[in-house]
Image 1 (spheres, rainbow, N blue to C red):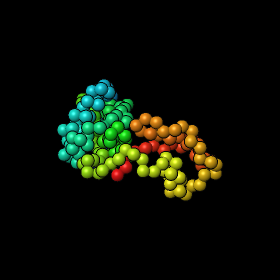
Image 2: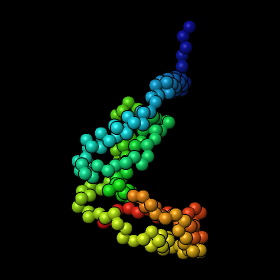
Image 3: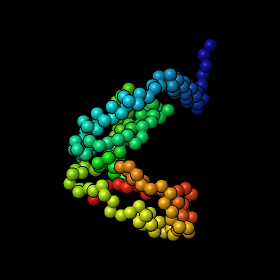
Image 4: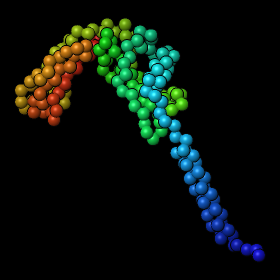
Length: 189
């Protein structure tokens, strides 16, 4: 028995079969990816791999050995949907965090580096950084409030005095914040 189709019917059937075949392939590919989903790297292995990658690429990052000698982990986590481990390294100067100076390295489950980002500062020795505050925490808070066009409705009260290398001072809400406000000491140029 043979079937004869008009040109229009044949193209509709062809589209149907191609679409069905495409959906089947897409389903099989999705199932294979789901079945082959690798678990993320162990955190210690991911950190070691990130640090190795940073030190092997100092020239690309515009850093030298001294600039990368004080990196601490500020965050490290893995994404569930793809197993990529994200390592964030905070640059420091004499044990004090440098504001927004981060290097991030994203590592695939097999240990390969996916990519890297950099906001760390190069040639820190040329920046004449000091660890002595040039403004008080109270002055810094008042400056921040002015910059945000806010004025304290209540007295600004120190709730917790500064301590440690990364001196943090906690202040009251002063009627302008939902939570106590924090001023954190950082290196100054």
